[in-house]
Image (cartoon, rainbow, N blue to C red):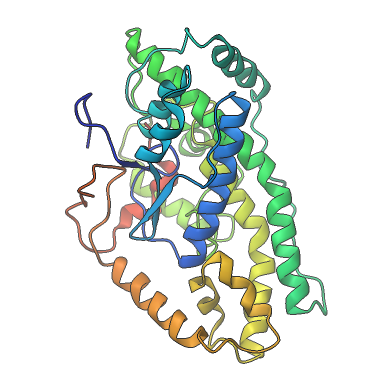
Length: 340
């Protein structure tokens, strides 16, 4: 779906996680909201723009979207802010470089050079230590999550810079169709890459490093299709975030298993249907009275949405949905599909 000047998107995930996307678990979408909100504040601050007091996001059918109205209210009255809003919402569109806002232009150029090299979170897994209490596991999960976010922050800033520059290049007449990330391009052209960077943005789903058969299946499915070009900066945010999740996954699995052993949960997978702000209750001394009903309702919602119509990357206030109303094989291919 495309939008002209008269019809601007109300919600967008075209910069963050475009393409076919299943609903995330309740932990997955709320953790993603926290990370994306932190990274957005970081990116706007380093571009010399106002930062939001609350994350400008909307969750639609367990997918995370940027809220266009909140972003416009925040940024359009600042020199260059309108260009950045457009880059956040419609990376596949056209626009000019914010020449009138010299500090912003300087910041874009400085950080583009600073971020020339992509540095995802370290590949060292954070394995649980023997004998850790549930409280210690939850504390270590939160501590490492905060400690790993800086590289995710830089990754979103790189994506924003790429979007601003690509929109300006299209306005200047350069044909810039959708592209792959650098690592997706290397994987699709036969290279060896870090598979921790690929997979759904959800702790519930393992990365391709844990399930290499998914990488092989996606490559085989896409083999008949032409391999697009790549952009050094585009796609870094979702790959850095997936690498962060890969590191945190062992700690959360240990917390989920401990909750099963203590009678809080029936199975470890139940832990992923608690939102981030309530997941710490798995480390409580006593089982919360609301836990079973809350988990049941969230799992019913998740299972239902996996079979429901999928919201588009860009939507108006009407929240249009894709016509397909079932699980899609394309969900497994998304990390290797072109980015706007």
